[in-house]
Length: 99
Image 1 (spheres, rainbow, N blue to C red):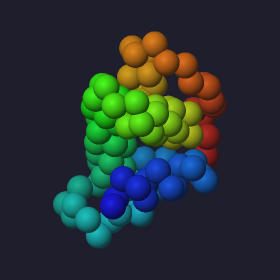
Image 2 (image 1 turned 60 degrees about the horizontal axis):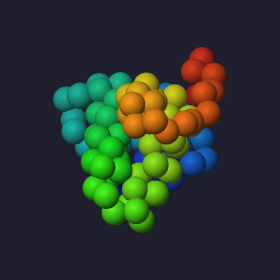
Image 3 (image 1 turned 120 degrees about the vertical axis):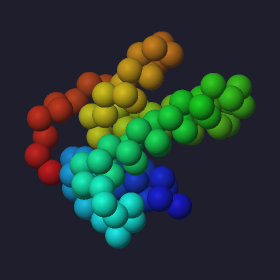
Image 4 (image 1 turned 45 degrees about the horizontal axis):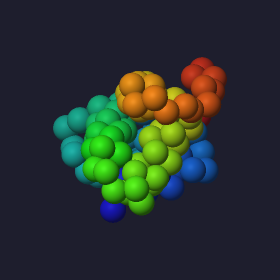
C-alpha cells in the first residue's frame, strides 16, 4: 500500500514534500509534486490519529510510532500538533534539512 511505502521511506531518509510527491508522480496526475507529497503526509497523519483514538492498544502503539516518525523524520507540522495535542512527546529535529 502507498502509506506503507511512505513509512518505509521516512524510516530511512528525510525527503521534502516535493520529492515525496515526485516519487508518486504517476498517481493523481494534474497535481503538483508538493500537493501530492503533502496530501500523502496529511492522509497518513489523519489515518494514524484515527488509529490512536481507536482504543485498541496494539493499533495505538503502531499509530504513535508512525506519528512520531512523521513528526521527527518528515518534520511534518500536523503530525507534531497531533502528538502535542494528545500529550505525547517527540524529538524536535532541524526542519531546515535539505533532501
